Image (cartoon, rainbow, N blue to C red; front, top):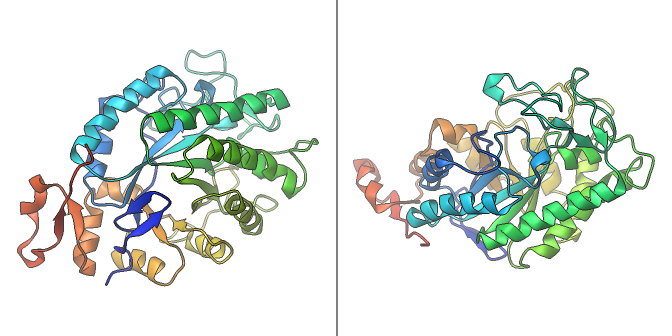
Length: 370
């Protein structure tokens, strides 16, 4: 029996297997609103047979977007556009859906990646003033961000709460808070970006304070039986930066506050990072977190081989594996993994006749929620 295809229940969320589709920014929204691209993109992924689909980072405020083309969840127009996409997806798939809520902080106000990804000055039509824990830019050539006041931090926390409430109105099954990849919550955690001298800077307890406050506020605003997880960067991969030991303490504090799962990524905070990129290069970080907490852990990062994914779950390095670019390249990666591992996987009846003759019992009919 495959460990990767064993079901898992987290709160009210039942996953048919341990394959999680990670959030992937598409930079295809208009004024924060999803477009028909998102219906195509998410619809394809919702037919993949994975256990969970996570909507890309949705900014909790306009200035929290990475680019002018990011998805948002900060006003009624954003909610309406997302609701239309979700209605289409749910009509044809029963796959549970989560959403990642985020604020880009000093890494905001940029161009789309395929157009260069450079940061716009605040005077540009597609740019705005960025914010951060401290007035320290990501790159020396970037604009210097505005250092947040306590009142401004409280407003951002309430933006996260409002986005969580909109998430519930949309009937989304789970929330993931983005505290990784150098975005705002990660910026508070790392001493490389947080130079504050008040109660939100300096010691590890102080640097964790704002991210933990945001988590608690979101957890309190979302139904208790629906999971709220957190994505972290296990390390900055920079000497003197955020590290795995601090990540363990942070993860334990999150677990104590009711966090449902920890998704362990890495890097993204500093351009001097030295990342040893290779298949499964972040799995040791997930393993370290898994050994320190009693909640599920998700491993991510160049996990593309079926046996590798199976081994990560079977050995207890993590409870789930996150697939991102690999499932864009192969939208039926879970089908192929199930065939290789002798498991079954959900598929729409329209596609069931496609299963190869040697895998007659591979595809199980999916019953849409709508």
